[in-house]
Structure formats: structure tokens, C-alpha cells
Length: 175
Image (cartoon, rainbow, N blue to C red):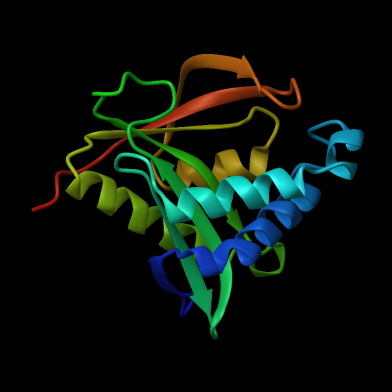
């Protein structure tokens, strides 16, 4: 296991989260999305959105970080209800999960996903969804190992036009 400590993110984690997002895009999405998009990441916009989202979360939305040896090594942001859902929906969405590429395959992503699914279930959400790039075989295999299943939804990524697919996961009720 990782030795990771998973906790709620704070606004002080903004720079670490922005850095993880950028490194995730550069490593995981090379060859999947257009190279010019990776070369021109919207760092300032991410910084603004992440900081304001941590300062003033919307509805049941939340962000968790995983720390290893005192450093933020990964994070997961959940929108609840999900962005595709009606405001009173019972479906939460994993909007983003990124782990330091140098720490992949060490259980950090699993620890984050276990944490967020437990929180969503405890908040009364019976199901979660997420979108991933269709050609991101590594991410799809990771989600499959955790029990996520593809449904029939498919759409282009808003910023890149790259095909994405939706996965869903039924949550176990928490007492």
C-alpha cells in the first residue's frame, strides 16, 4: 500500500493540484489529445477555478488530496450532483483525478477513489459517473479494476474535441 494520507483539500493545496493536473495532462494524454493543446495548457484558468472551488464548494461537491511524506501526491474532485445531471439528481461525478506520474501504480489513485466513493455513498448518492478519454487505455483499465463500467454515452471533450466515454459505478450504501 501507499502510506498515503487522504484528506479534504484546502485552498492552500491549489498550487499542488494545478501542478498535478498539468503533469497528468503532459504525461497521460500525450498521443491522445492534440500536441498543441498539451503545449498550451490553461494553467492560470485552472489555478483560478481550483482556488475558487476550494474556497466556495458548490452543493455536495468536494476535493480530496492524498499526501505521501507530507507532499500532495494526488487529488480527486467530485461534483455532486454531477455536471450532466439535474440539480436534484442522485448521481455524483468524478470530474478529475490526477496522481503524480512518478507515483503511478502505488495505490494512491485507488486510495483516492475509495475515499470519494465512500463519501458520496455516505451523502446518499447511489451512483457515480466519470468521463475519460476513449483512447486512455491505462485509465480505463484502472477504473475497470475498481468496478467502473462503460455505458453508452460518448462525446467530444469540450476543450480538445477528443472522444470521451462515460463510466458509471454503483455505490454501496454506507451506514
